[in-house]
Length: 317
Image (tube, rainbow, N blue to C red; front, side, top):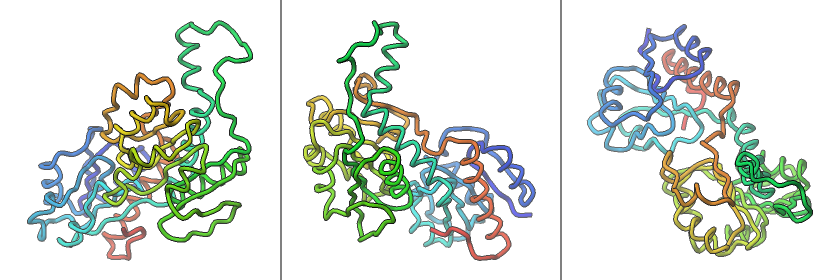
């Protein structure tokens, strides 16, 4: 049997599936791999199942042309933590888990849209602190979303799932920007630029892939184009937003609030964001549901099985 290395604890059903097909070595730590651990794993195992935070940068692959590992079966759809080009140059393939995360991530986006616009986390803190003095007509007035415009940047699987939720669920109009023309099966308008989406929207949701091309896609200039009552929601990757610029825009009242599930220097979250009442902060819960994580793991293992059997990879990157 081939040797498989899994870098983080995964649901037991996934581990059982892996053990049925491989000699499994499981790393029982929840922290990312260090460079030395990654290089050692490439030498010792036939397949590695890494995940977010395991930074397989170009230098990790230096001199690995004859390494034992020939596949990184990534646990997750996002793979910007892996230098795919460098991996392929030394003969290591990369797969991911598309589709399995779509609905769960879209649900978190919808939750953040509602929580930010209706000041839900601020209200909960008020109640938990014992400071709520009772209902009154002007208490904690937020933004009603029905009839408002939601702008989505990135109209892939997740972006379209978010669009359906905000349109059919909340009655919002949808505008979007995508790198290429993209038709969708719901009432939505594709605008010419990100700036156009920012200027037209009451809520903006970021759903683009991570990586060098989208790092700081939203910075000070982009935030300045948003409406003062608008909210920014990020369920993509943390560094899609220039966090310092976001903090500045919130402090200056350029935008009304933000809902974040990801952070630029994750897991570090700036104290300035943690102190703001108009920011909803989640600990990267996008796919954090038992069945979703099981599906992701099964897909990663199935890619490993296909590779071991010499079959075509199911989800090559």
